[in-house]
Image (cartoon, rainbow, N blue to C red; front, side, top):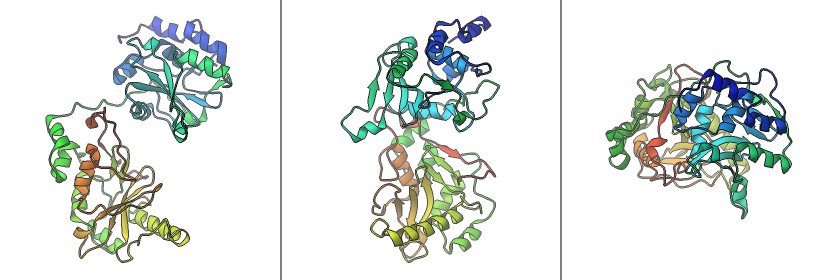
Length: 385
């Protein structure tokens, strides 16, 4: 993965490049101005692997594409609603040894099978088809060929031989995309916290908190007055340590001391009202009381899929409140009695606990320290939290 010369870069983008010529024979020559700069050395260093020559040549000449109004061929950039720095590592967790190259409007993902060869140019393309889970078909479709021959096969099967720039990409940057920083190597302290210990102290050892927690512009008494109740001290300590943000790309903690519509108090009020309306229409699916009803649940965090992490306001004080998950796409389960908030997070991050709404995020062959973490919300920014 050494530095390429200017001649090599120009050759890779040239229509005379055999890979570009093969692609152009199917989908047409790249229009003027379609190229998007890519620093392939930086991208390959960040990914930890070289990439196939046909992909780099096509990506350099065409940039990201919408092929046949069905398939997106992604290239390294971060414009519009697409961010390669998030998409590439998240999709890589779908199976051991896969590396994503595109996806379809049916939520299928195209991968290279990097385990098939030490030579990236020999990596065959495979497609993960989630809809096949509903039947007896294999969720993996194996093409047995590199990228450009695979695209040619899809065209032969009916994919329209048209490649255009999709609106999903928005305005593309004129400068080469900069990969995000690689995750630092886990420390011995993190390794130890992954297998032993409990409470907030162990949680901070496992996932170092941000330098300053993002809480909002108000105070705790303001929040308590607005909610009509104090909150568990363990939650306050957790928020004063981490603040608002997203755990492992799944569980989002709201800003507790903000008046923004997605902050804790406004969100809890909105969600609770919505739940009461649903309970009136569908009581068989919505059986819980809602704060400030006696023993009602009070939401304080949610998943990216709309599941709610709540307290069930039972007992003499907030310290007695058990946790409960109100799933979006499943039946409501029992309270998580005997589980504190920090220990619930710890067990979930370690992969030792899962329930509807808090699914197990890793695989048996994965090291949790490769993907668990906490991403704080920006200071003063609107949006989730």
